[in-house]
Length: 234
Image (cartoon, rainbow, N blue to C red; front, side):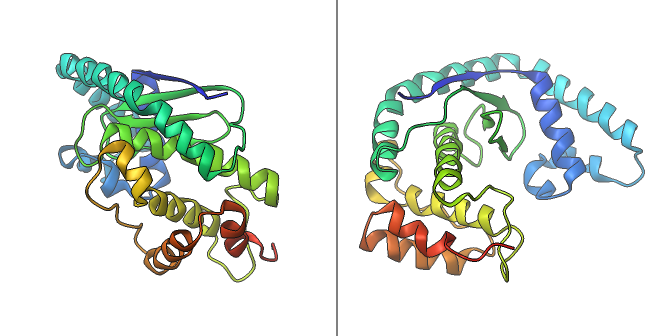
């Protein structure tokens, strides 16, 4: 069974998205449009910052309403054209592993980074192509859902599991680097008519080069991930 995915506009969800990123403090410069980076100033109190985030987000949705509606509708149509091919190749990659059950929801965003919630099966995507293509982002986030379900069931590893001697975000790095390897794999790229390679996350370049070599030599998800996740846990 393929996932039941709904792509939608939810202003409140995008406000919560911005509040989380700005409070969390990671990748904030990547996340915020240039005209809104002033929100990180320390002169704002927590409540003032959240109020401004809400006002800014609602304002952008209001002035760009037609563009956002058009962008999301176009994204739905484009996703419909590629989703069957995407689910087919993911089924091949994960050797028939079943998608975790539940309602999947993608929320359009006016911001520039697109987090996910593995447990809730929700994620964000750009309403139009700015830095990232909406379709590529949707596929990227969907692949995370099956990846984390796969490693949880096979290795008893969660996204926040830590390994001795490894970076605290080691599992996150493995997941993102794996996605990058797949996104640069020719059979996958052909689905999206993508010509350019995706760059690995900063700090993951060496992991990426080794992973890419391993995957190109043999596309066996079990043997591949054994090399990265069969470590002694903390």
